[in-house]
Amino acid sequence: MKKIDFKVDYSKLKIFTEYNTKDFTYPVVLSSPHSGHDFPPEFLANSSLSVEELRMSEDCFVDELVRAASDAGMPMISMNIPRTFIDVNRDKIEIDDTMYFNHPLPQNNVGGSRRCRVGLGVIHRIVAQNKNIYDGLLSYDEVQERIKNVYDVYHKKLKQLVDRCVKKFGFCLLVDCHSMPSKICRIMTEERPVEFCLCTLFDESCPPRISSHLYTALEKGGYRVEYNRPYAGAYITFNYCQPRKNIFTLQLEINRRLYMDENVYKKTDDFQKVSENVCDSLISLGKFLLDSQK
Image (tube, rainbow, N blue to C red):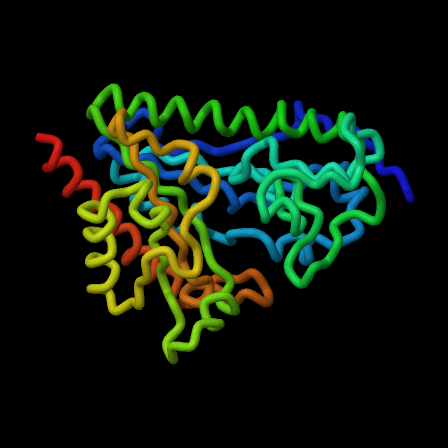
């Protein structure tokens, strides 16, 4: 099979953008790990897909949706590099060794989680509709460079923000912000699609007294909100949760249909209204948490 071996100039990449990271008004940290679309040119040159196809996995505009909440006093880090290059919401050991021509372990020994096995590990093999990102095998050495220069950089900064929040308030809620394809939200039998999903690992990462406040605030906006359906949480939700240290996590999923045209990656006229509803709900949650810490 074809061997794909290239080197990325990481000195030209801005890995993430941080917002309001010096002003901790509320004990909440925001993360948007999948909203990036700054593709390394070397990656694009070696992918078998177009930019439009690669963006099918993107959480478009999520960082912009929650920006006002960040401006109000919630530090936020937003990934600039797309998840099709490397997915920071996966454990870095979730590697499908069948994707590499020089993996140190025997081939055909796919390890890690179910996501890894279906092609959605830390290095994605596919995008939506099972389209292959590459038409050959990658260099395992190059992938280790992605982890070192992108993945580790993002998580180092996110951990710093969480630690600073705990140091100031003695408590931190990390809200990991995502979007859901509307098709996923329609697969359930109910007539009305899910519009917001609060992923709490079934109350393991975030106590109901916290998640219910956000649930109620969003529901007042007329939205259909669900807990842990269709998602329950992923790596960041699981990895950063440390209840004994008063660190909790919640993955927020927003139905893309609410604010964008998924076919052309454009905002709709409802974008601003949805953004205001989301940010007002997050700020209300922040005030609730701040008062509960007094």
